[in-house]
Image 1 (cartoon, rainbow, N blue to C red):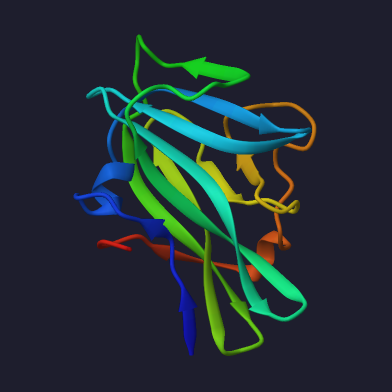
Image 2 (image 1 turned 90 degrees about the horizontal axis):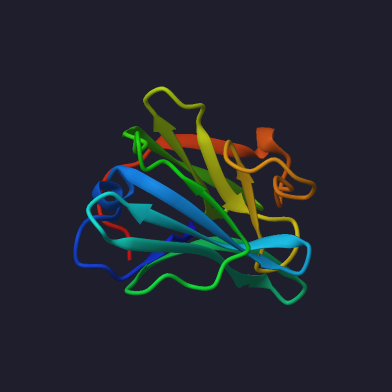
Length: 161
């Protein structure tokens, strides 16, 4: 079995970073599809989320999420602010896809917030794109790489690199 894990090189466990309160989210578009999502944490840190394509074999690729701490706000086209009531994340799940019975790809997350619908951030159907549900409401914002029933939802624990 070969695993394609989330990319993360931060010093804190990724699950604890993802559970930090969110005061805003900004979206950078890649053409007509989401390219990167930045979580603005209430404590002042910024977390960029985007998709990296990995080769499964000679003719197939899959998207794996990359999480990166950034130190200045990247350029963006859309923003949602929660300044008055930051989103309190109560639980994080990861979404995994099994490829050909011998490869597991970590392709998405679901953030469950108090008093807000779940936020899904998943590798998108276009290379290096994201599919985002629960935040923005415009065309092509939630166009996933796989059908939703192909993803296995697991509780997120620990540090991924």
